[in-house]
Image (tube, rainbow, N blue to C red; front, top):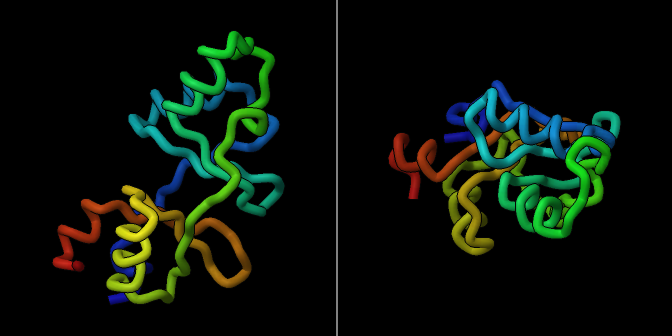
Length: 124
């Protein structure tokens, strides 16, 4: 099974120049924790609700003016839409991550795969 067959296609993203408050609002509205961070169409990192709290709020950064790019995790683990699900599952286990950003071969974000998506489809 390919990642394109089980990924969530309705991926919410945030731009690196958005504020922490805008990212938090997107997370709240979509009821999600992680957001891929883009500059133009290029994936440059991930930001999570934990990043906002630990790297932003705990450091005293103003959520209304501080840009997301300041608190992102730049080393993003990703897979490709035509990648086998088993291969992605192994990568997620190796990197100990719960969600994997899915890209097309033009490096555009096209989906996300969670451990739950893999489990639902019997992928190990």
